[in-house]
Length: 188
Image (tube, rainbow, N blue to C red):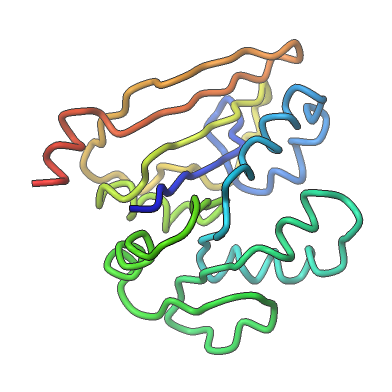
């Protein structure tokens, strides 16, 4: 089964919304090395419609640096009930219920699947036991307003800390995996 990894820039107050407004002062070589590591082995990007549309408006006009080339050339899977023509490829629409669609995608041959943005989708997939790792780059800034990664309540999902690093600029990097007890329950 292909691993699915969710990646987020997060403020100290838990905001993941609009990182372009607060992330860049912290984008030093240490932090950017983590961003580069996040693309290793990834051959599919998974996103919801809103994130896809935001990225489609920005990334096709960017080129000449590794992250832009990676995003533009990697196959994108878009979970949506309203979008019929992606208009930016390579891309595939995953219509209908996200959980079985992503479960099927994970069962296909291929490399790692990454999800960036798309908090609603990540929450649903985490609760369904389909997220294999959650990577958080926590920035030492209080944003004050915006969407939180986990803002809609729901049942607790246990996580085990798999790795952690602290960078010179105060950003901390956390890698979480589903807690062993939760993973066993999801597999049953």
